[in-house]
Length: 216
Ligand SMILES: [Zn+2]
Image 1 (tube, rainbow, N blue to C red):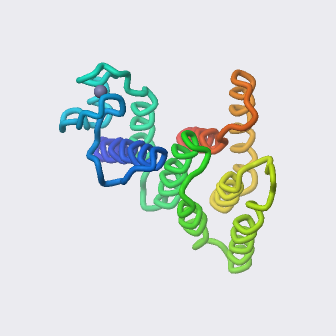
Image 2: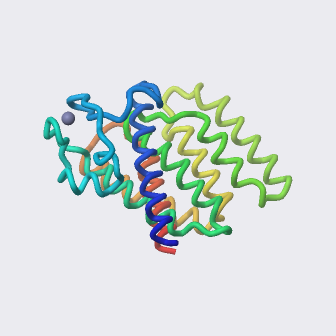
């Protein structure tokens, strides 16, 4: 069962990478079929198998020898690992990781992500909450959406606030503090190495969330 879940997870990871790529390049999800980003040659079935194809191709396009980003292999592997933690009790956290994983992949490329992710990934954490918490969350979510666009230079993105809100609802205060500290430390090290005025924070938040989830 673990092997089957790992295979499904790796396929989903591959799908998330492809979807984020289509979002970043403003192209349709359905057309054209999977192809090499460099030479645009459509890929055949054996070049589309998650993890295995990357290893068979030795990380290079079969036609033009352009390097395939190793991050795709890593994401497929991690998505496979995450899905092996799926049980009837962990459906919501695993779904949460998948949704925000997609947002983080988009954020890494464009510093934006599709707005619908927040409107799905925050509400899925609400069924276990009291009515008061549900109402406060809806007010905060609407408030972030209405107010954030009016800030000239917000120190943090609205998407970052939404993921923090939903993490807190799912895992509580202590876990949120540990998660945020880990993500911030990773971002500090990164920004020290590559000094820049702004960078996507969601990938760090997601990496930290994945590390804590798999560590547990
Ligand atoms: Zn190629």
